Length: 62
Image (cartoon, rainbow, N blue to C red; front, side, top):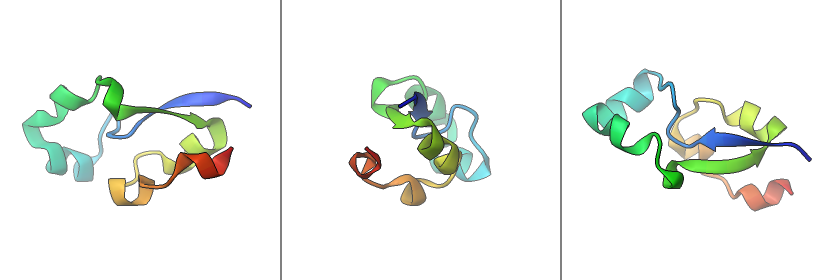
């Protein structure tokens, strides 16, 4: 299984994420708590969706 690094708060945020974090975005984007290993197909599916849509248990994908 191939894993990709998912940034929970996207590394290149869309307007929804930028509005949610404002200037604090730069403080969270590179932190380990903002990163999650996900299977490639799952990472592609979550993309830059809002957190409420990303808020799933990744263990169900294994």
